[in-house]
Amino acid sequence: MYLRESRRRNKDGTVVSYLQLAHNERHPRTGSPVARVIHNFGRADLVDRAALRRLVASISRFLEPGQAVTAAAAGQVEVLDSRRMGGAWVLSRLWDRLEIGQAIRRAAQGRRLDGEAAGRVLFALAAQRALEPASKLAATRWAAERVFVEGCPGFSDDAAYRAMDFLLGALEEIAAEIFFSVAHLLNLDVDIVFADYPANRPAGSAAVDFVLAA
Image (cartoon, rainbow, N blue to C red; front, side, top):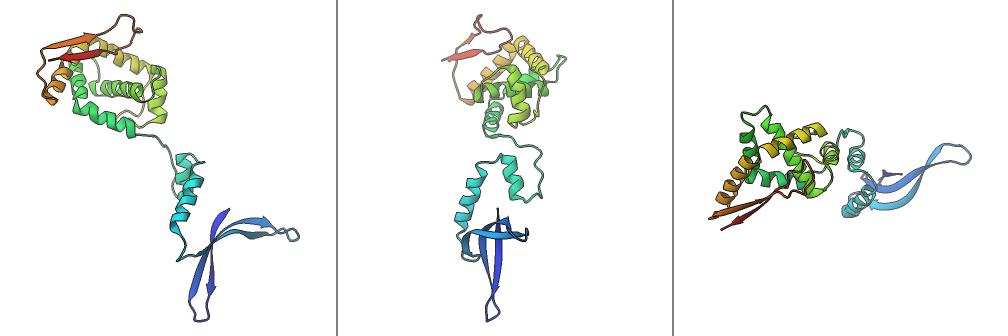
């Protein structure tokens, strides 16, 4: 099935084009392909473009995003990868605004660890928990296949556990930097900070709850 354009020349020499939805069928006697018109859209210069867009959108619902792009480009574009990025992008901007990445990089100084890489892995783990909660093993597949995480095309489960071990070891200094950053950002006058790290959380879990008390 395809959209075809047919032309007709008028007596005054002008040419008028028509758009038709057609598909090829084999002639029962000759066996040659013959176009059969399924629907006439009318003159090309007067056709309802919005109706064509709705038709394309309706067909695209049944295709993967990469397949839809390839089909629209008529094979001129090869889609190598297609991932979502909206939720992770918004969380990354919040992560930067609260200077969490900076706190992690500063804590990594003097340790045998790439602070930038560890920070992006920790961000990916946090983003996955916020957007599609699952295990750390699932997070490696999520970051490598399902979503675009800026600065983190993917990581192994070993890298995730190394980053988590680093976070647990440097938790107090990282938490202190984030606290002062948030207090300054929100212009808070804070006297007490409560940090909760329940003992019944799974081993290797770095989830910590903070409460700021004015």
